[in-house]
Length: 139
Image (tube, rainbow, N blue to C red):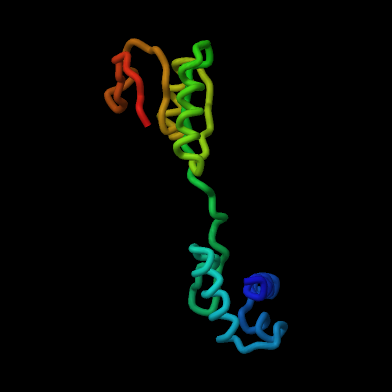
Protein backbone atom coordinates (compact mmCIF):
# COMPACT_ATOMS: atom_id res chain seq x y z
CA UNK A 1 0.00 0.00 0.00
CA UNK A 2 2.90 2.39 0.66
CA UNK A 3 4.03 2.10 -2.95
CA UNK A 4 0.48 2.80 -4.13
CA UNK A 5 0.34 5.92 -1.95
CA UNK A 6 3.65 7.11 -3.46
CA UNK A 7 2.18 6.58 -6.94
CA UNK A 8 -0.93 8.52 -5.94
CA UNK A 9 1.22 11.38 -4.63
CA UNK A 10 3.17 11.41 -7.91
CA UNK A 11 -0.05 11.61 -9.94
CA UNK A 12 -1.24 14.56 -7.85
CA UNK A 13 2.13 16.30 -7.85
CA UNK A 14 2.45 16.00 -11.66
CA UNK A 15 -1.26 16.45 -12.36
CA UNK A 16 -0.82 13.65 -14.87
CA UNK A 17 -0.83 9.87 -14.90
CA UNK A 18 1.71 9.80 -17.75
CA UNK A 19 4.19 12.14 -16.08
CA UNK A 20 3.78 10.33 -12.76
CA UNK A 21 4.45 7.03 -14.51
CA UNK A 22 7.66 8.46 -16.00
CA UNK A 23 8.75 9.77 -12.60
CA UNK A 24 8.05 6.39 -10.98
CA UNK A 25 9.61 4.41 -13.85
CA UNK A 26 6.51 2.34 -14.58
CA UNK A 27 3.94 2.32 -17.38
CA UNK A 28 0.95 4.64 -17.41
CA UNK A 29 -1.46 1.69 -17.29
CA UNK A 30 0.42 0.20 -14.32
CA UNK A 31 0.19 3.42 -12.32
CA UNK A 32 -3.51 3.70 -13.16
CA UNK A 33 -4.07 0.12 -11.99
CA UNK A 34 -2.17 0.80 -8.77
CA UNK A 35 -4.31 3.87 -8.01
CA UNK A 36 -7.46 1.81 -8.64
CA UNK A 37 -6.13 -0.92 -6.33
CA UNK A 38 -5.47 1.70 -3.64
CA UNK A 39 -9.03 3.01 -4.01
CA UNK A 40 -10.42 -0.52 -3.67
CA UNK A 41 -8.33 -1.16 -0.57
CA UNK A 42 -9.36 2.14 1.03
CA UNK A 43 -13.00 1.63 0.08
CA UNK A 44 -13.55 5.02 -1.56
CA UNK A 45 -12.67 6.91 -4.72
CA UNK A 46 -9.69 9.24 -4.59
CA UNK A 47 -9.89 10.65 -8.10
CA UNK A 48 -12.86 11.59 -10.25
CA UNK A 49 -11.76 10.63 -13.75
CA UNK A 50 -12.92 12.73 -16.69
CA UNK A 51 -11.43 11.28 -19.86
CA UNK A 52 -7.72 12.07 -19.77
CA UNK A 53 -8.22 14.53 -16.91
CA UNK A 54 -9.06 13.98 -13.27
CA UNK A 55 -10.04 15.85 -10.13
CA UNK A 56 -9.49 14.96 -6.51
CA UNK A 57 -12.67 13.83 -4.83
CA UNK A 58 -13.77 15.93 -1.85
CA UNK A 59 -12.20 14.94 1.45
CA UNK A 60 -14.01 12.04 3.03
CA UNK A 61 -16.01 13.77 5.72
CA UNK A 62 -17.35 11.45 8.35
CA UNK A 63 -21.05 11.77 8.94
CA UNK A 64 -21.93 13.23 12.29
CA UNK A 65 -25.14 13.38 14.28
CA UNK A 66 -25.82 17.07 14.99
CA UNK A 67 -28.08 17.67 17.96
CA UNK A 68 -29.51 21.00 19.11
CA UNK A 69 -30.25 21.43 22.77
CA UNK A 70 -31.81 24.15 24.87
CA UNK A 71 -29.06 26.33 26.34
CA UNK A 72 -30.78 26.95 29.69
CA UNK A 73 -31.56 23.28 30.46
CA UNK A 74 -29.68 22.20 33.56
CA UNK A 75 -30.74 18.54 33.94
CA UNK A 76 -28.41 15.58 33.46
CA UNK A 77 -30.72 13.38 31.34
CA UNK A 78 -29.46 14.70 28.01
CA UNK A 79 -25.81 14.21 28.90
CA UNK A 80 -26.50 10.72 30.24
CA UNK A 81 -28.34 9.86 27.02
CA UNK A 82 -25.34 11.10 24.99
CA UNK A 83 -23.02 8.90 27.03
CA UNK A 84 -25.27 5.89 26.45
CA UNK A 85 -25.46 6.64 22.71
CA UNK A 86 -21.66 6.97 22.50
CA UNK A 87 -21.26 3.64 24.29
CA UNK A 88 -23.59 1.85 21.89
CA UNK A 89 -22.44 3.67 18.72
CA UNK A 90 -18.80 4.65 19.27
CA UNK A 91 -18.16 5.17 15.53
CA UNK A 92 -20.80 7.90 15.19
CA UNK A 93 -19.53 11.29 16.31
CA UNK A 94 -22.04 13.64 17.88
CA UNK A 95 -21.88 17.43 17.81
CA UNK A 96 -24.05 19.35 20.26
CA UNK A 97 -25.28 22.86 19.46
CA UNK A 98 -26.88 24.97 22.16
CA UNK A 99 -29.43 27.73 21.67
CA UNK A 100 -32.72 29.24 22.75
CA UNK A 101 -36.07 28.20 21.23
CA UNK A 102 -35.78 30.46 18.19
CA UNK A 103 -32.13 29.58 17.57
CA UNK A 104 -32.88 25.86 17.71
CA UNK A 105 -35.77 26.28 15.31
CA UNK A 106 -33.57 28.17 12.84
CA UNK A 107 -30.85 25.53 13.19
CA UNK A 108 -33.44 22.96 12.06
CA UNK A 109 -34.62 25.16 9.17
CA UNK A 110 -31.03 25.72 7.99
CA UNK A 111 -30.14 22.00 8.38
CA UNK A 112 -27.45 22.88 10.89
CA UNK A 113 -28.79 20.20 13.24
CA UNK A 114 -30.48 16.87 12.60
CA UNK A 115 -32.52 16.89 15.79
CA UNK A 116 -33.37 19.56 18.37
CA UNK A 117 -34.54 19.10 21.94
CA UNK A 118 -36.32 21.91 23.75
CA UNK A 119 -39.36 22.55 25.89
CA UNK A 120 -41.24 24.77 23.45
CA UNK A 121 -44.95 24.15 23.98
CA UNK A 122 -46.13 25.16 20.53
CA UNK A 123 -44.99 23.97 17.14
CA UNK A 124 -43.12 26.57 15.10
CA UNK A 125 -44.15 24.88 11.89
CA UNK A 126 -46.11 21.91 10.57
CA UNK A 127 -42.89 20.93 8.81
CA UNK A 128 -41.45 19.50 12.06
CA UNK A 129 -42.77 16.97 14.53
CA UNK A 130 -43.36 18.41 17.98
CA UNK A 131 -43.38 15.47 20.40
CA UNK A 132 -44.86 16.55 23.73
CA UNK A 133 -44.79 13.17 25.46
CA UNK A 134 -42.61 12.71 28.51
CA UNK A 135 -40.86 9.58 27.40
CA UNK A 136 -37.45 8.04 27.53
CA UNK A 137 -35.71 7.67 24.21
CA UNK A 138 -34.20 4.26 23.67
CA UNK A 139 -31.25 3.86 21.33
